[in-house]
Amino acid sequence: MSSSSPILVWFRRDLRLGDHPALTAACESGRPVIPVFIFDTVAERLGAAPKWRLGLGVSCLAEQLSSAGSALVLRQGDALDQIQALVRETGACAVYWSRLYDPDSVERDTKVKSALKDAEIEARSFGGHLMFEPWTVETGAGSYYKVFSPMWKAVKSRDVDTPLSAPSRIPAPDAWPASDNLGDWALGAAMDRGADVVRPHVRLGEAAALNRLDHFIDDLVERYDETRDIPGVDGTSGLSENLSLGEISPHRCWHAGLRAREEGKAGAETFLKELVWREFAYHLMHHTPRILTGNWRQEWDAFPWNEDARLSEVWAWKKGRTGVQFVDAAMRELYVTGRMHNRGRMIVASYLTKHLMCHWKIGLDWFADTLIDWDPASNAMGWQWAAGSGPDAAPYFRVFNPVTQLDKFDRDRSYVRRWIAEGQGNPPDSALSYFQAMPRHWALSPDDAYPEPIVSASDGRKAALDAYENRDF
Image (cartoon, rainbow, N blue to C red; front, side):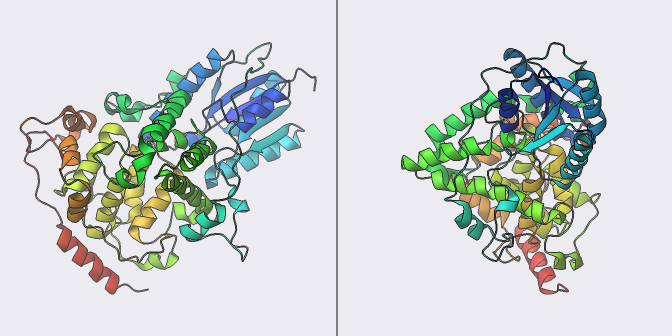
C-alpha cells in the first residue's frame, strides 16, 4: 500500500466528529480519510421511529463533514460486501470503526474484521460508545455485576478518558467513490404523517447535543434530584436521543457532570449515576445477551403472561386510551415527540405488565418501533426491570399505582392537560397534535369521550399480586 492509500472510517451509531477515537486516529495517520455509512441489514431491522431518526442523523453528519471539507459516502447492502467493494474502488489500506455491543452488531463486526485481516487490510475497532468496556468491569469474584449499586461503587471513581476535540482537518482523497442518495433509502417511510409532527421535537446533530448538555448543566442539574421525576417540567437532560446515535459521547457528558459536582451543584451525582445506569444496561447485554429476547431471570419463563399483542386491552394501551390518565398522557407524549419522560416509561411499563398482565416483549417491541431515542440495551433492561423479570434488587411484586403516582408527580395535572385533549374545552396544541400523529385508521377525535379505565388501579394491582402469589417458581 502506498502512503496515499486511504483509511475508511465506518460510521454507525457514532454520528459526530468530536470525541471520536476512530476518526481521530485515522486523521492522525496522515492518510486520506473516507467516511462511510452503510445501510445494512442491522439498520434495516430498525423500527419506524428509530430508522427515521437515524436518517436525520446521517443527513446531519453528511452536512457536518461537508462543512469540514470532507464527505460521507453512503452505501446500501451487506456490510462486508460494501466495505470490500470500497476497498477495491479506493485502494484503502485500513478500515476503522467504533465498537457496538448488541449481538447482531458483534456478529457482523467480527465477520468484517476477520475477512479484512485475511485480505491483509488493517481492521481496527475503537471505544467511544461506552465509558467502560463491559469486559473491564468485574466483581471481586471476577464475575459481572447483576445489581446496579455495587457496579456504581466500582466505577464511580474510575478515570474516564478526556473527550477528544474534533479533528482540525480531515484529509480528503484525490477522488471520491460513488455514493448512494440518502433519499432513495426512504428511511422515514414507515413514519408516514407522524414525521411532520415529531420533527419539531428532534434536537438533531452534534451541535444541538452539545447545546443541550450545556443548558442542562448550566440551568437544570442543580435541581435534577427534584425535577427529574416530574414529567410536567423541563427537568431532565434529554440527551438519550443524542446518546443513542452517538451525536454526543458519554465521556463528554461524564466530564460535564464531574465539573458540575465539583462546583457543588446538588443534582450532579445523580446525573452521573444515570450515565452509569446506561453503562449497566450494556454491561448486562454484553454478558447476558438473552436480556434482549427472553427473561433475564429465566425462572420467569413459567409465568403466565399474555403474549397476544392483538388483544383490545393492548391496543387501548398503545393508543393512549386505557382510561388511566398517567398511562395515556405518557403514550401520547411518545407519539407526538418520539420520546417519553422516564417516570412515564415506568408507569406505562408497569401498567402493561402488571395491571394488564401482558408480556414485557409486547411493550419492548412497541417502544422499538416508536422511540426516537431507542437503544437496544436500555430498552430491554428498562422493560425487564419494570416487569420484574430483570436485574432489580427490589421485590418483583412492586406494582406502581398510576393514580397515586399522578397525584405525587403531577399534582396540578399540567402533564395530563398537555397531552390528553378529551374533556378539555380548549385543549393545547400539544394534545391536539396526537390526533395528527396517530395512524388515520385509528379514527380517534379530540371530541371523543374520555374512556373509563379498562382496568382500574386497584383491580389491576390485586390481579397482579394474585398472579405472583400463585406463580410456579
